[in-house]
Length: 351
Image (cartoon, rainbow, N blue to C red; front, side, top):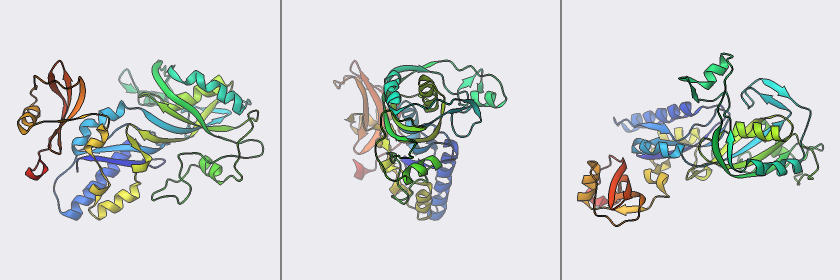
């Protein structure tokens, strides 16, 4: 029970609520199995209530790695509706600006390179950023003017996933969204997504046709606000816009392929089988090379001691005692120092 539960977070549920749902499921399993042990639980990156998709939930010793998920790259599908901007930059806010201008597909394609690579963006006023000790969204809800400072982020890839809303109503299904009934726990599409999935026939829109909304895919660095990106793209097109659909399809090494619904999690809890749905603690460290250590070296690392005289490559490594992860360590100048230690003791058969 030390590992990752990858939720396909449903629309309308906040990240903290998702963590609470996992805690309830763990309590249910404990009652079913008659156990007494409690587990730490934390999420690996906030996902807005409006958003759906990959939300890594760390359990037990994996919570020590949750911070690494916050620093990881992420991939999103998101839809921008043109013509109106809301104070929250999504569907939940009130309209604060409107425009009659509707861009063409060619105009959208032409502006995207301006938002690819290192850019600066102002986070939304409705965000959890601290300003003088208070959350920005608390200040915004009080009606106070919130000045958000620019921050540097990197957009690795930004491309059109599918256009929507030509004059003849033609559209193509969004990639990254399950068709109704596809797979266990398939998410309920947003109204906009449902309209798009149901549209028949499907064919590419002409470059010169004006479209009322478009779905983009973005591979972004930590700290990127998709709502701000959508706002700025719309403004660069000479109009305004807001996000109507946001779905995270990858967070660090975790994708929708391993994500489960809350219903499936609850079902597993009632059967005492949550462990079968979990990914191991090491799944969050797939990009880190393994380092085998002896039992004596493992003991020293567990005690926080430095191992000297090593000739391994400089950088992060994952130390193993047999099959048991001991610590995330950093090697430099022949020394091996603990970055994150794990309180996991091997059984004799695991060596």
